[in-house]
Amino acid sequence: MLCENIVSDILSAAVSGGAGFAEVFEEKTVKDSLSLINGKTDSALSGVEAGVGIRIIEGEKVVYVYTNKTDRESLLKLAQNGAQMLKGINKSGAYSFDKTDYSLKTLYPAEILPSEVKKEEIAAILKTGSDTAFKYDKRITQTSFSYLASTQNVLIANTEGLWATDERTRTRVFINAVASDEREKQNGYFGPGAMKGFEFLRDLDIVGLSNEAARVAVTMLTAGACPSGRFPVIIDNGFGGVIFHEACGHGLEAAAVSKGASVFAGKIGKQIANPKVSAYDDGTIVNAWGSVNVDDEGHPSQKNLLIENGILKGYMVDRFNGARMGAAATGSSRRQSYKFMPVSRMTNTYIAPGTDSRDDIIASTKFGIYAKYMGGGSVNPASGEFNFAVNEGYIIRDGKICEPVRGATLIGKGSQVLTDIDMVSSDLKLAEGMCGASSGSIPVCVGQPMIRVKEITVGGRG
Image (cartoon, rainbow, N blue to C red):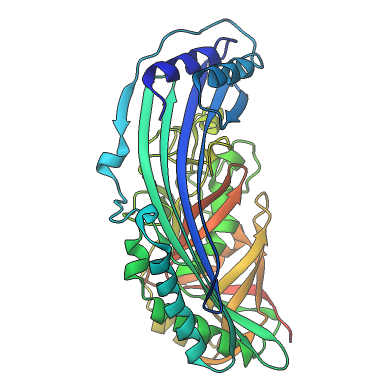
């Protein structure tokens, strides 16, 4: 990584045009991946991504430049070019730093670095999963299993004397089973991951998850069409939290709030959800997929209360947008890589446990839809209007989970869903995913206990 003298010189050059603040972000990321199709190796790749990004801020003006050339001359030239875009009084000088190495007190120690593992060992575990899925039912006609791992070393330094370093190791597995008959295909999918090394795959219940993926695919292959209309919908824990993440979470990021492009702007202290709903964004959960020791501006990660008993309590705030709002940074600034300027993003975002029991939620529902596993969808961040697919759904009739249905889609508005949640169980579970926005694609967890929305529009095939 860059030495102190070079970083000081880069920062001095970056503010030579008159900017009031500059920041250096350096990364070196080692990546490994392996994928199997139908139990046979399809690809095996390894690589390194390295580079430096320089952000320069003067008031509400910001410049971001980056390069994969890390020699002193190239970096100084890049910083000087960026500085010329923000004219003012020359403020350059030498800088000293208060150094913090977050890897020494990490939330996510890696026992086995992925780069030290032989591809044959990874392939053998994935093949066990593939074989398991094929054995589940003769209607399983295709499987795909993938392994992705990375170790990212970062340095963040700025003109205020901050110097933070960290090492971040992540491992994830993708499990997909396809069931087919003469009419169509259905699939079951899981994508577990963690801030861990190869030990994550070693300890993973690959057999159990592969059986479950096959079960979902076969179940949905034989399911009938989902009816359309407005019904109560019970959304199970775990990845069900994707609706809160997409339809509400993005609206609580300072990047949207500071521009007035969020339905939640200016509503701190106001009732925005049912009193049963509390929600957090917590980047400090040990080994969680979306956790960070330190965010990509050098602020320590923290647990941020967003909603308490239905009252809006806070936003997720980065430096630049926080300055526009008069709000302190909350350890929420993230980016995909050195090629992206950081901005407020989620980490592990979830609806907190409630007091209702799962049995009572189901038993008290006369007719509705039970969404066991949610899929992908789309959302308008400004309005919170969303459209999400249900990967595995069932009819609830007279307080009991009955026949499976496919083709269900949940359509609504995030702010309305928050007020229409009328039951929240205690069984909080997190699930892993990737979130794309202006600062790239980043790892996040979504989560919730089982919840019931008293009424929502359900699109189906019936």
